[in-house]
Length: 290
Ligand code: ADP
Ligand code: MG
Image (cartoon, rainbow, N blue to C red; front, side):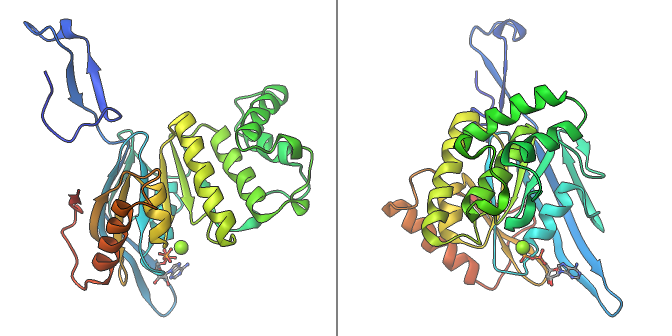
């Protein structure tokens, strides 16, 4: 028996058939979203102005989603990510992770930023990754180093584990930042244009690497970008935002991996361009289109 709804394999909870009287096949219940952003308005108060960065934005991220926030500069993508990270409090609306309201930063939400200077310059690659694990207080130095080595290997930097950040390329620094965040095994990885400062070729390579990592561990990621190509390549769900203030324009499903260079991918990119240049705003929920 399949309960009707938008449940996917990743979002469904399997119930043993013995729990369903008279039913010999598995029952599937719809799981709650992992991240629930509901009617979120975010504002900055400056001496002269009150800036409304986002207005009543709602979206849901399910486990193992590669969820993209896409929109032009100034539409509130970074502000939303900071609010999910617990660094900003909504003026209106709620944010909850696994049913628990987000009230501050926590190790269940790790961030990766665009800047190359996120690493501690006086620590090696391995030490940078281990440092956060040690600081979180759950592992001994030895255990942290072992786990750090595992994640450094995942981002193909084992050969550079004893290298200091100033000797690494931009792409390598971003890989370290990703390994550091992943090593904490957060519930959700928050990435704010992590590849935007890289050259075009390295950027494509990093996108592929991120997808390979996802294939390996199926982590959940909320990924911010202003690049349509990047959104279509990386995402399985894409939320389009319009600026001033940031509002939901539409939500689109994407097949993600390998789609970007196909005709379907091109059609999706064209559709996103059209939607982004349209002036009207959709409903608060961001209806998902196929
Ligand atoms: P994006 O990441 O989509 O480019 P941001 O979230 O950085 O957009 O910004 C959204 C809006 O909030 C913009 O109008 C921006 O000028 C404003 N903003 C961002 N940070 C601050 C701040 N610290 N103080 C005041 N306004 C800000
Ligand atoms: Mg930004």
